[in-house]
Image (cartoon, rainbow, N blue to C red; front, side, top):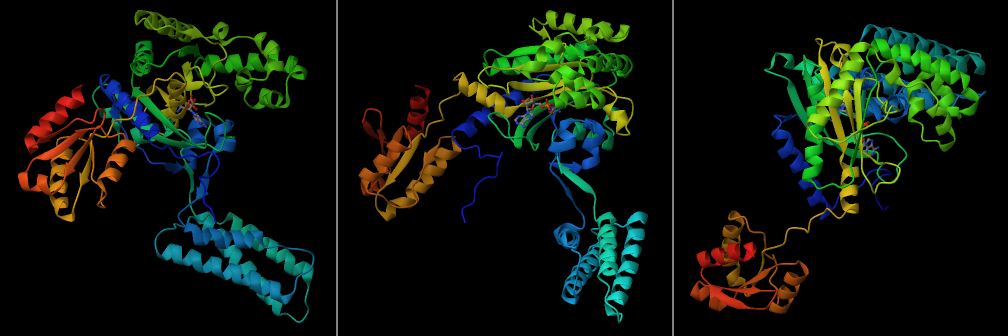
Length: 519
Ligand code: HAM
């Protein structure tokens, strides 16, 4: 069997990984100058956290999360699957009943073990369904041993047992995180961060998981660099400063052709009225829309504005726009945001259709697109989410943030050749004769402590072979240690670019390598 990375996930190999490190380090450096500090979040959380934050009608929650049952563990889950998958045809014999009983016994045993080990907690509902299961099992046993064999009745009870086990909660629903804003809000509440001085400014770097159809720039495990500001103020200066930080970061990476689009999707109140108006208008043009948009008219009309279908674009342009329906406060907030962006010399476009795919947004939304990416050209999305913390049971809190899709940012940098040459190896040791190895190892340690990149082959090599390896690894120098060098305490250093070589003592060698690196 040949193992391969599964669809939609990938390895990031050297030398590309060096570019990833530089991008992430640049984020750390730039964000620190705005007083952002790193938060490291769990990779999985309760499914409900994402459902509540992101919203049930969103693509992310309704079809893209990787979710699993936990607590009871794999064995309990498998035991339940066996019961669930047991085929109930129209006839059944003693053998089949015995197999099914085996599955049920296994499930009961595993559940008891999990409870005894303290990994599974039982709530009232689960206990009730379990009692129901036990009484159904007794009935099954009585029927199976009764004088008359009755297929229909036996199958009926097996169905009941299958239903009862499906309802017995064997753990909490967990999901791999599809994004991290929900986790930040959860952590903010859990650690009572509202008591900290000033706004809480956090950033995170790491993988996210969405079951999307993989294509260029769209993966099932992808990476984000995100930042969030939580606090008591919703001043648009904060929005502008967050965007300023983002543009400073992208400039530092010399990303070319990035475009910022902004919008306001209003607050709870004015958005509700706008959504009603939009739905009315959509109902009138329903026939000219595709199946997806038709469905969204009722479930989530704002998402129709996100449509990329060419044949829908004409109709969408005629729809009412949110800017004309904002309440006075939201209109003022949006005007101020634009003032603040101008003050900072940040170029932007207004895109009235920028509604974003997650339900927690209020007022400001923004997105950055970059060239060289085809259809998946959004390298960053963000916006304001006042009220999210409250929705999750925390104190009244304002919030704004963004997440950069690192995979896409890297692709765009590669397209525009803003990648760097991999760091070169300073030297490779050509040690000749086993007796020279200890001296080579000691010198290698000294050089590494001084920050040089050196390769010390673990096997002795012929001189020619060592030189050829040095060449293939792109080393600048070969340090040659033979018996002469061992006796004299001076090492031969050969510069591979021009073949010049000289003999140097240890400290001279260090000085020489430093000077040569500077050239
Ligand atoms: P989002 O727009 O869902 O927002 O994702 C942000 C960015 O992550 C996207 O612009 C894109 O670059 C990248 N991304 C999303 N899905 C994929 C994928 N399947 N493959 C590759 N890249 C992807 C959020 O996640 C919000 N939490 C952002 C935020 C933070 N809003 C406020 N604070």
